[in-house]
Length: 364
Image (tube, rainbow, N blue to C red):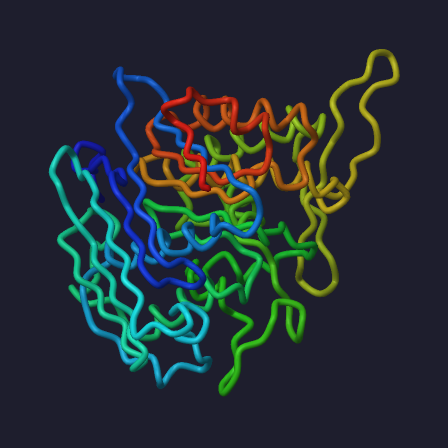
């Protein structure tokens, strides 16, 4: 087990992009907070069509470099990814990222050529993220990541210690099965794949959000029924989960409801309401899209950066949220996980104005 003292602080200092998607060239700098303990939160704003999402996708590609260097031949993959990511008329796309890892300068360089070749050069090595991995990321694993980036799932991309919440994310309706508890995260995100083609999340089979799998882990771990689950950690996870559900949905998850097809539903018990007592339990899927979005986003940030702080990209944090929650979102993520670096892209004036001027990036 990796000790907390062995973990490293990572943050992005500079991002440079050339010929990626519709972007000709852009360079962004992310200065450190002036005072220790200040929020490391940057908010990017612009009108539509100027490339905020493309910038985030380029930044997410740098996450691959934290798993090692290598050259990958993309022609064997199941989709022409080069046409998606290399700017029309260009021979190659280049992405550069300068990072600080526990105060030391590190870099990741990516070159994506028209010859369907992806070259990754990296001087970053973070534990425990690449513990047990080879210096070169596995080819099939890279393919899975690129398909996630191309939008073949509504799941956020989780590559600890980095997370990318894209603008088409959604907590999908559907009940998890017990066997999903033992599936690894990245393959589970792509479990809709079948040989010879890639499919969308609603074509055949079932698709269940990783957020719900974490909920199931917490419930089963608290009950102490699985030897592989740490009960103390599960108790802490369930406590945090219910704190968010209480704040945004007015209740807590206390029980599971099983179905004949070996699936489980999460039941929310409403809080006590004066003399009337608690209302009838209802399904988590019965919450509004805004409630599910803010609960799942805040929970996944807390869960995946509890032991290792990281870089969190959130495209349109205001997605499905009312104006009151726009104003509160930035404060919530910082209170929940203050050690992370956050980079947000938004159309909301409330979100854009919730950070100091030197933390704002306005694209023109």
